[in-house]
Image (cartoon, rainbow, N blue to C red; front, side, top):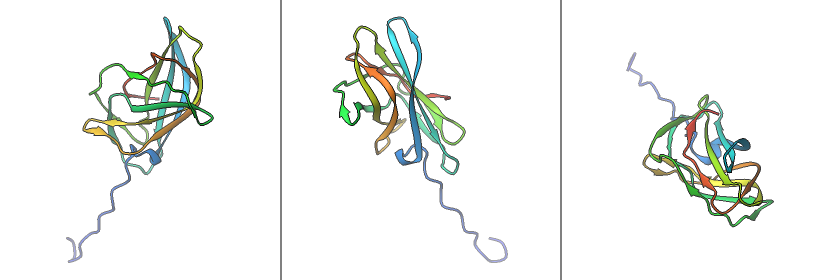
Length: 145
């Protein structure tokens, strides 16, 4: 207190991890032996608070023009490594698709982000063109675009 008046503190900024507070895009990435890869990049605008993510997104669903693909992906990689996400700290995760089959076209992925203590409420979505098949797996969130 200074001069007998209490200083008001600003309310905390909304979390970047909440689905309404970030955007996500899907882009084709470098292929590996026997697999196509797609990178899903999440970015948050200034004004939102940084948060911590960990592991692969869950409840991932793919669709083309709103029609579900029917492909239920698995997960791969370490699921407990914390990653900071927020303004100036984009993150990404990998969608790895076996090249054995032609696959189903998709233009959207919806998913729930994971934090060290569990899932973050709400459904995020990413747009971009990809093909998915049975055996598709989702990698953990990593730092960087």
